[in-house]
Image (cartoon, rainbow, N blue to C red; front, side, top):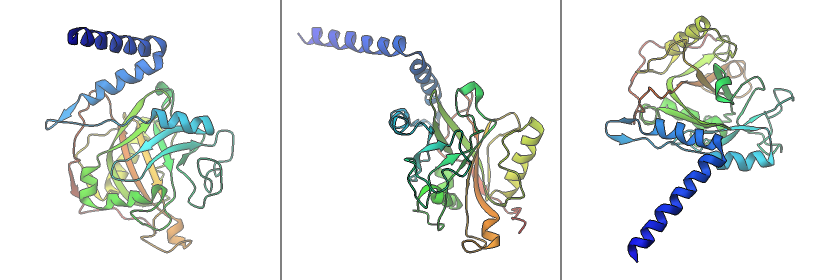
Length: 272
């Protein structure tokens, strides 16, 4: 009897997998992509690849402006990315993901950012979120300030995105304060311009990351406010930002449990 039950379990499991693969080609692609990446190991440990497909589908059913989902381990940044398609760029600046007024806004990106399909992914995925008070336990992107802590930065080497058709993993290579004269947020980039942005970002970074990154890589740029150089609404506060940048991980990259970083002893400071 036990042998018969075990055979039935195997048959039912196989039918379930076939139903997923045959009935939904996009889901099949997604499962393959995640499986290939997640089997890469570093120092004998397996990296968990979060999948927020279900969460993205639920919010998208309520608000079709939800274009992706962002997750950063060790923070409460586990949220949809809103994209005001056909609306003004500031639409979500003071609105939440349900289009209701919220002073802290939501996490959003401009209409020109391409998050899917994968073959149209933007060269620099620029994502914005408010930081109301530099509180490491604050709302939206306030918790990006945690990257100023060396131990946290070491233990948080990746940014995870779930889009409509795949899982994206970005490896962090720079965290920095900057003035807005530096065009780190440019999205229409050729290889030479991207190379220059990467070089400048690394010069400004709080840490030197042991990450190979070049103008051929696709980037992510997370942007938030900072109060390090001045109080709210002051000229210096309005003209400085805190930025986290990463490069897209490909199947040829190995996922690391920790980032290899050293303190940058010659940081290029904001020009303010």
